[in-house]
Amino acid sequence: MDVEKIGLAIKVLEFALVVSGCIYAWWNSKTRATKQGFDEINVRLNDHANRINLMDQQLDNAPGHREIGEVHNRVDQIGQAVTGIQGEMKQMNNTLQLIQQSLLEAKR
Image 1 (cartoon, rainbow, N blue to C red):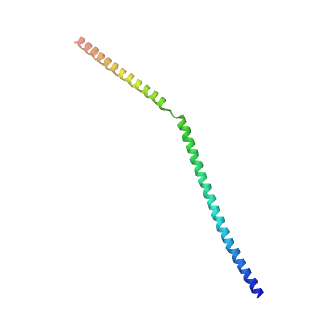
Image 2 (image 1 turned 90 degrees about the vertical axis):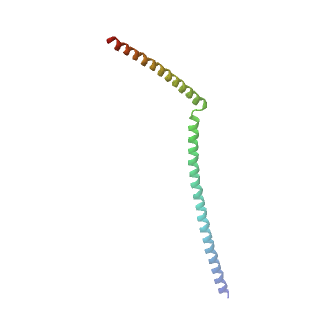
Image 3 (image 1 turned 30 degrees about the vertical axis):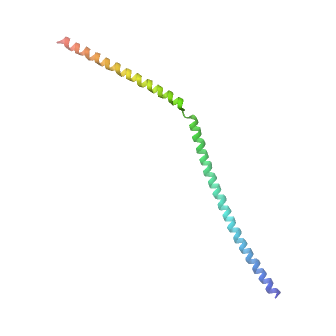
């Protein structure tokens, strides 16, 4: 009977070792997958952080409301100057037409 008890104890011990090995393998693969998942998330977060830093740098260098207002005023000044030049060109055109008409009438 002692041999039977020892054989049973060995089988129970063998079963316990197999079950513990299976649990260890499952836990190890689960932990590895979790670490790999965290590594992937960290890479993505670092990529997003780099993008955000780049956008912050670009926004720091972007013109503000004051600079845009100055550009707007300058564009308005240029528009007014072009309008003035347009009026002068119309006057020059009228004068030229009068000169041509006068020359044509003088030839008759």
